[in-house]
Image (cartoon, rainbow, N blue to C red):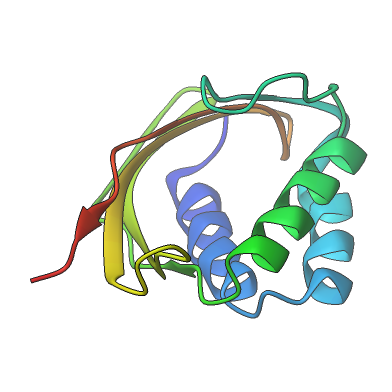
Amino acid sequence: MVSEQKARDDILRAFEIYNTKDMSVIGPWYDELLTPDCVYHNPGVRDLAPGRESIKQFVGGLYKRIPNFHHNAPDDLIVQGDKVAVRYSVSRTDPASGKRQTSMILLIERYAGDKIAEIWELVGPWQDDA
């Protein structure tokens, strides 16, 4: 079971750290937050091996492809037992069109003790900002 305060602190810290886009900060933080065998589930990401090292490589590649990728503050955060559900948006500049875009994300994390052991993430379609 994870406390609501720890889950909230972890999510807010995650967004702060992700928005640095600095893997020298993100990598060590993952070492603290994720179990070594953490599993990441995302229907849009195939063939990602289990483990935080694979997740680090995936995230590092994301920030290389989309350097202005930005996590916005959570819209909803629900904690129940060992799971945390978060609804939030991300923004970017579309590499092809140069237009600013936003997407909604639903994230569920399962804690084992005080570390995240499993992550499910659904990313909605990218929408051009008005």
